Amino acid sequence: MSIDINTPPILRIGAGSVDSIGELLANLGATRPVVVTDGFLVSVGVAARVADALRAAGADAAVFDGTIPDPTTDSLEAGLDAIRAHRADSLVGLGGGSPIDTAKALSVLAVRGGHMRELKAPFQFVGKALPVIAVPTTAGTGSEVTQFTIITDSATNEKMLCAGPGYLPKAAVIDYELTLSMPPRLTADTGIDALTHAIEAYVSRKANPISDTYAIAAITRIGRFLRRAYRDGDDLVAREEMMTAATLAGMAFSNASVALVHGMSRPLGAHFQIAHGMANAMLFAEITAFSVGDAVERYAECARALGVADRADTDAAAADLLVAELRALAVELEVPTPATRGIGRDTWDELVPVMAQQALASGSPNNNPRVPTAEQVEQLYHAVYA
Image 1: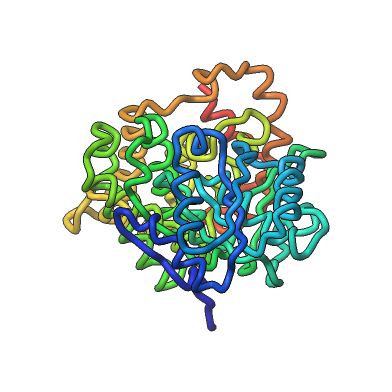
Image 2: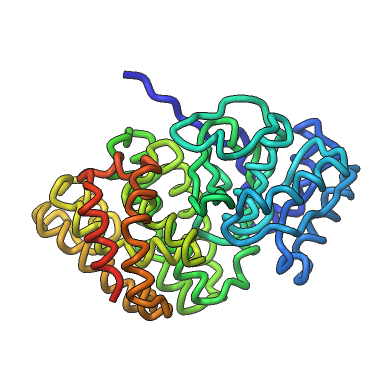
């Protein structure tokens, strides 16, 4: 059986690499980019730094700062207007997962037209799109190197997975210095997000030797450096290693897919506006405990890479140590539960059946080592509430 491995053609990695983005754009043959970002990155000057670097290389750059957390089909409309007004021939996705996902969706709609609802999984988009350069400012989502975008349907409140090589950025700039201002909460949530990507890619039913290599490399770095980055945001080594890990984890799951954690986390963002990384962190330990018995050896290798088990441990013992570590990590990094986030029990219980159906409809749970029934998904949602 053959497999396709898709990654951006160019990865520019290292401190200060964002300042050479104009050269990258020129190499793509583009001259009229729109920088797709958010108001925060405009307010702190990061968007201006990127736009100035593009202009210094001769590009006519515009900035669109109207992205929102967990982008919706409605929120894309203003971006499309900005692209048309500028007559853009390229996009720069600057920010965390939401601005980059927005840029990827806009790159497709600007050429194809239509509605994102027509493109949700299992549909695979392989058509033409505006070229995107992705510049992450968080170390977690991996969106800069993936062939996915997540957009919420404003009409139905469904958080849609949209997939296919057409969403893959043409280049990514991985500059860890852009993450130095991340507060501890964001460092924790995005770091656990990256760990979720790597572990789910490794245990996915679509895993392959290439994605395995990326995943294990990511897990090893996260085990060594997540706590360091959380405790000391000025630890440059930890910041650089976590940025590298996030990109490796992104390449892993882009080529192996994610599984049940992601399938169940997307409805949390759609219904309760919980950030993607935090939603994954809320679910991660409980779903791993549910899944571990159907892929003991694979989970054991994750535990060893994470540094919580070694070859002296049996696979069963190592897998149990992984679940224990995920629970401990959630406590140490102060991951909230739905209850401590202020979500009422009645509201949660009322939405559980809807969320379970949306989770299963995404297709991601089918990649899980243990494929759940709707009833089991509902039970897992109830288990993580307290």
